[in-house]
Amino acid sequence: MQSRCIIEEHTGEKSMGIKPTYIKALGMEILSSYGPRFSKDFDENKQIVSEVTTVESKRVRNRVAGFITRKINTGRH
Image (cartoon, rainbow, N blue to C red; front, top):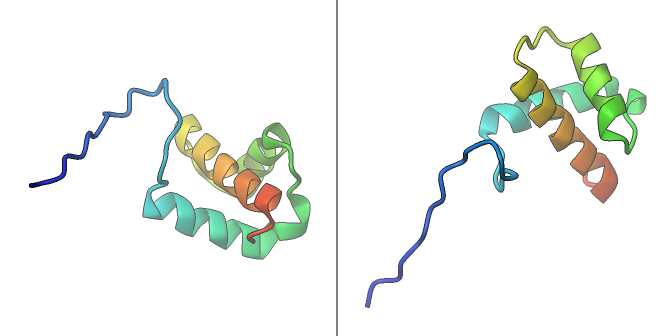
């Protein structure tokens, strides 16, 4: 019997489960260059991402900041 997988479309209202590769790559690059500047606070990290990158999209900036915040909070950076 074949197993079923229900895939929900991301509507912007739910949190993302798996980050896209470009978010991870950008986040890791920023962390390696500016690691000590980041904290456990998402809003502070969001501001730092705005300062150190040229990301124009608020959505992408927030995703990168969220990725970095999660890495800092879990100690996996």
